[in-house]
Length: 144
Image (cartoon, rainbow, N blue to C red):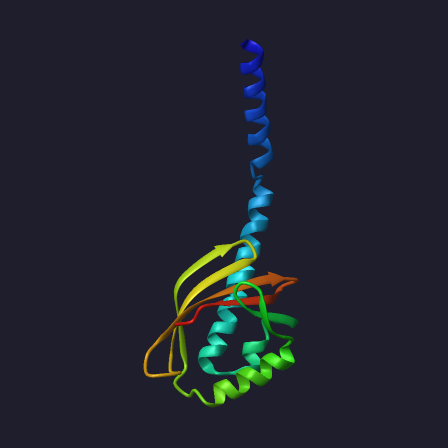
């Protein structure tokens, strides 16, 4: 019985040591989260200004945009520019407001309320993945 208790105690402390974060680990996570928030906010501000050049700045040249969970809509800044340039030109009252935000490392999950497209507000979720200091993937979840 003592052996079994000792084994369980050893496993517990080993697991605790493996999953414990050092201050350096925590600092790295916080830096990734700060960058992710900054990039998401940059594109949001530019979206609300309908400024296509500023809007594209935080995105990777090879950004991939999906309908959740995995339907690729398009790839690359060139196609993103074409789509959003037309969209911005036809929506002078466009406004996106973040109603909820979850930040986990290099991922941002925003619940959004968008006005200025139709008579009623549209709600949806956007998930931004950050890689190499740019937004590399965007997933849109069911806009209503």
